[in-house]
Image 1 (tube, helix red, strand yellow):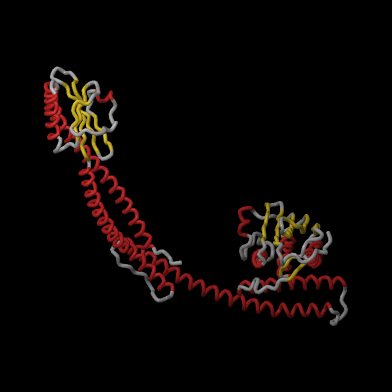
Image 2 (tube, helix red, strand yellow):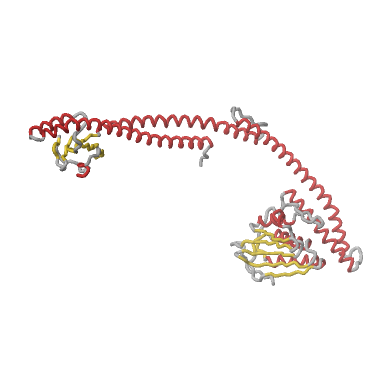
Length: 476
């Protein structure tokens, strides 16, 4: 679909607005002129009707004594009406027709009461203007009422000529508005188009500054935009350089740390195997604690390396996994840490849960990170691990009675390198890794916490056609 440009939008809006105003003006002007013309016609006709009434009224009083006089008056009225009127009818006060210049059927536009009245009345009947004019004698007596018929054919011809003349003027106005709108749209949008073109060139590195010469405020905006983009471009290059230096530094430091860690773990494993000689149970337990902490330190170094390379999740292979069994494995590995911290473990795993279609190692990593935080930030009390099915989802919650998180800082807990308690070990990557893992599985992670009361972290796995693979065999 073709994209509508700013110029087309501006031109279309301006032209439509101008055209609507022109149409409204055209209609208003046409009917206003027509109304003025008809009013002028009525006023002009009134002068003629008054003249005829005042001329022939007295003669009617004198001439009605004989039939010949009536015919003579009829003939005079017939000739008098040729210039302005189509027909003249005279009524007496009984409503009878005294004189009719043409004869024929009369339109029933006026009631007998109106004919006997003393008001000057006008009315339109089809293409004829009807005027009712009373004759008042010199002694103030209403003697006759004249009815004049004024044809409007020539008015219609005038209306038609006027309409077409006005229409031609209107078409000319529309053409003029079209040209003006086109020109004005070009004047307004041409600098914007030029500005957009230069910005594109700036983004591609083909231009070092943005400059538009229009003599308007757009020039100032272009200079301001050029300065902002230049600063942003410099800042972006600096950020790229710093990010590369950071990645190189992390890679070097991680490599330097992994080398002695690997040697230390190997030496501890060698001692624990008994090949270096027999050791006491107490020493063995202490060495195992050292070995676990070295493993945790190695995992953290690996996490830092993954973040620096953008390889937190990577390519995943999914398989049906029993969430209860996976949770049991993580709890077994961390049971000694829980006991050493004097914490009570509450395990509520719902039986018969469907398997979830996930990457086993990544979900295990997520669960381990959540449990690690619960152990680390709980001085006394309990840790509750629970699984259940709700609203078509498998839910895992880890709740602790630890220190909790301030409400105003809950939104930032999933950001990288976020730490709230600097007295505790850690890099602030645990929940950030959990979030990325759950997003890669199209799941959800939520956290609820109150300062001094504890924290609950919730993982939600959606069940789909690939997610239901048998029943969970984990025990409550």
